[in-house]
Length: 523
Image (cartoon, rainbow, N blue to C red):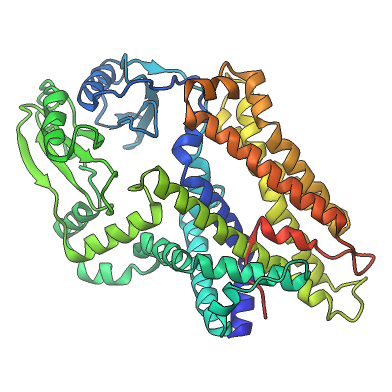
């Protein structure tokens, strides 16, 4: 079990670290997206979802009159705009054209914001790694999650005194201190680590184990029924060709508000608007509901008549919906979201400390610590780039958001290119420099980049940190305050690294590095 714990944690540990850290950030992806689109004004007063939905639907009818489908994500306490997505008939051989944009909830007009994926980039990277195809990216994420689950179970079995070790911390004892820290991080967040790993696998279970579904569902009608159990998306059936004006959206949203509460409206989806077969779905928001199962009202798009209330699914679909919601945490209030963030950050630290401890323990057993074998050096350098280098790359993504020219073609994609280019440079730096020097230099680089984020924002936008604090704009100010806190953490680690002595000319990884990142330590 000790060997299983060690190797399942190591072989995909770098992937797990990246998944954990970007997943941790994703709990505040909506707030980060606000910061990365400073052109969108802050919502000072709450808005009526019914009125907002009508305004934007009218605007969509003007700018995309031929849309076969559209979807509106209405603003809530975490977002300050209406995000709209629509599909247009176009192209050859059945191809479709798509459009998207952000709309001012007060006026209903489209707002021109800089091109960026915002916090959604970290969310997507967390489970499909972006440059990989979604299919293979999700398979890699699933393999890493399964390895994590095995490592957790094997770690519990291996550490017989796991709860005793939780109350044991020997400060200033070098390797022993960091192993104690690894144990404490692992035990304190153990229920969360098990939950988040297992539920992550459940979210993509149909991809990993599709054979039962294929055997049980054979007809198009059965497949449509399955889709209805999992999603509030109404497929746009074949239009009749008979034009008919879309009914007012506002009364439909009002009916939904009477059921779920005035502010608990998530989306408004339309299929075949402008046709006699039009359908409208008003979906329930995520707040206060620990399930991602579909809960929506379906209306006739021409008459506005309520056709059905889809508020119940089967036991299997509801179980899947609850596990899905537990993983995403979108039901949570601010306090619960911070608990998610802290527990997930501890999971990140658990993975990172384990990666570092692997090299620390094995360096002592090398025949010649000054000249380690290739595999050891490779693990050591990958640790540096995966832990310190990832901090630099993620901060570079924020810098690119502020520095790239606003009218730049494919600007959103170039922000992502900067992320991967900088991350690649950190790996090259780690390969060329001695290990301890690479740790120290990359930690200081992350410190400087993080600390200067508020300065960069003040120099490039009209929303400096002090103004956000004065206005009570905590979504915007919180991003910069968190960057300052993380800069302080990286500075402490860089200082501890500089003070830590080496055992050889090649220099061992610093004992302080384990605090920022994280995996499992072999006993």
